[in-house]
Image (cartoon, rainbow, N blue to C red):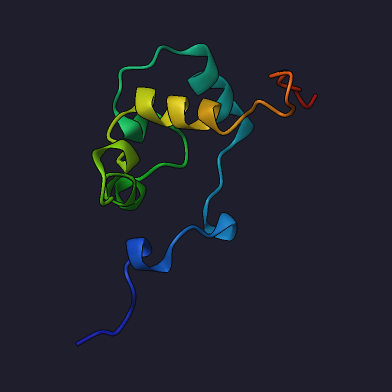
Length: 87
């Protein structure tokens, strides 16, 4: 029996996750259907991991929730509720 860990058990490794510039550009120009695997770099293991959690609010089961979670982590950066962008 093999003792190799599955990708979900290994966790995120940026060395194993590569997205070409063309793939990313196509995603950014396209429409979102809600299927998490449409996001470049998100495979079956990531979909499984994102769907786990003790609370329904922690679970991410579609692209819209993933974008919402990303945006919720973006700010505000100060007490006057200003969100700075990095360019």
